[in-house]
Length: 436
Image (cartoon, rainbow, N blue to C red; front, side, top):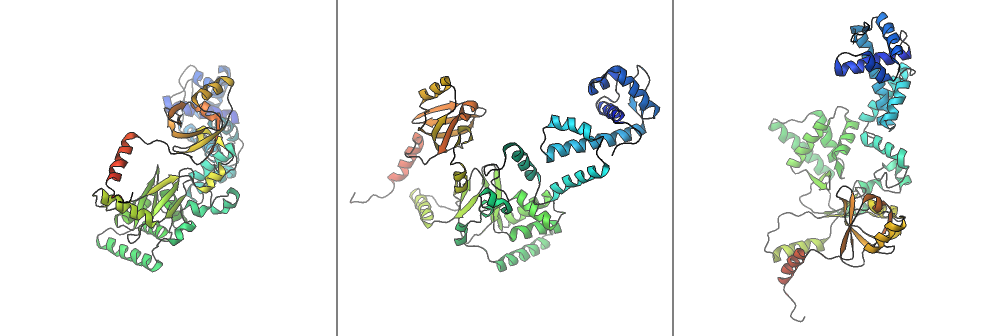
């Protein structure tokens, strides 16, 4: 990859001139010396060499600019540097400053074939539906924290044995789903063909890429995010783009073939079955979704709507919590700053100095005490907890020094007074048994 006409040192000078010229049109010797951290005498010698080769316009004490030939070569050198740096940062998760330093050295010794292979690998990561940006981010997390369930809750099924987590459960295809009504395959095919005819008549014919998106969604009875749909569709049709997914899923939702569900900041899509109904359990840690149906819940909702003289049209019950796999992963204990809003935990130990331990003791935060997390991102990362009937805010460092484990609360925490009044209002209207 090394240029036959320029030494590594001269390549660095040419690249420095190019970088400076991008911002200020021309460069000066003192700027080059500062950029490369070299003496001005060395700069003068290098500038004369580059000028003799016809790569720069240079006269002593004058501004320096690139010739057309010099600009072409400088862009090639700078592009090579950027590609190596991006590979180190985005693929190997190297810290930017360290990546910059190593790119400066590697750009002079890597062969063209090696750099081409690195470029192809980055392109493969972007296009392959089994990898993508999340895959690269996961590697960065692995390089820092190692391999464990909390870091990789949604690892594909090939790795599920290592992680102890079911990939099917993450997608919402657990055994509890089996009893729920599902659309038959013949009906899926009818819906697909009918939709295509309707769109064609209205002048909204689907492209091949959009049809690929619809086929992927219709063939999978799972909860799929936009990224998951895009990855699977690209595996079938590499020409699929994000816009195709947005358009296709918008059409499916418009025609009530699919519906979107929002769980916190995550949006997933599922098949819409108007003839049946189900609710969802959502794990706020790993994103696992479990469908369930309980006729007792449906009856209670109808009953409460009638008591309030309310005509019920639609309802959707989403229960947020932590799945069994995540609970098992947390059984060894964790720091308080890793807890989630609404969790009830018991303090196991305090790893603080004596003064901080005494301050926490005065708050009632002692080993064995049951506390509830009210907010895990309060006032810039502070943790707001409830101890008995008192509330306390802990700074992030202190929260990290409090080790806790999950425990089912032994007593109900008080609801706001307004809510208690509302509940009494509804209860007052429930007919009472004369025998009571």
